[in-house]
Image 1: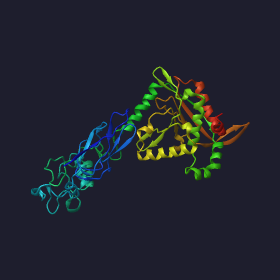
Image 2: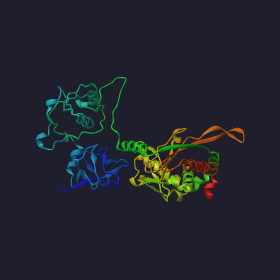
Image 3: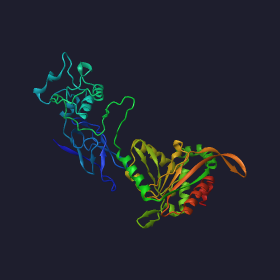
Image 4: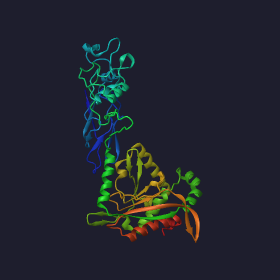
Length: 420
């Protein structure tokens, strides 16, 4: 028998540990090489762990929800295992000839056997229910997942200790996340308690860190989006045909932000102890909401990117965030961030700085609003911009003028071409 270790992949230098999510295979099941066995969640990304070899998963060393470190062994694969795969496909067959026939000791009268279906057996193990403690209503008296859920919710099942069924695999380790509610039935006032994911906990930690360590102030302005909307409408079809991507508003906001950061470099700087670090590059973080929480992938050297390159990269970030495929290197660093709450309908907000950055731009929903132009009230598509900044190094003058520079670039996009 040749055993191959399944190890945690190398993590980022800033990530000391990670959390296992849910195993996709059980001990005794066959696996193919490079088949994804489990996902590992760090405080930044979710990583997939593929099988390093084909064979049979012989042992799970660390159960679902376990905390692991880089290069730690979490499972073992028997690369020469073949018979175990057949046994996994037919769990009713015993490992020894003497155990070929299941004893009916716990079976009810008649043909019922109280054998638990695989999903039900797993749920019973999670809730420490002994074999035979839950009456089965399935075919031939088999215990279904619904039987176990009903027993747990109603408190009817007793944690009876009984000899394991001859065909049962070794009991699965207890799961951190269980399918059945652990709290009693509260009728019309249900509650559910779930632990924070590692990513959510990290986001919470960084937001508190930002508010406690930065002197955050927010300045606001409004921008008439009509020139950008007109330009976008004029070139949308040709742009899409040429570059294979639609031109959105975010590329304009990124370009306008870079335009302002060049004029006022302190907005692109960061604090390191008692030093101010001025960055000679422009790495713009784009806040993206994902099913697992807020992530901020980085547009590297955004000043050197075209409108099409920005739009393609943002679309790629969005798809990866939805699928949990963003890499650690894609979310490391950044000198300035943009948060677009407008896609959700936000009218105004005060964004929180993403440390160690010193400023962040909040973009909101563009709505037709009455404004005064040349003494006349007219309707224009207005977007309220908000820029939060660290007042320790950025004075109100630079912050206000920086936001005005963004406003002017958006209201007259030609400025972006001539860098004026």
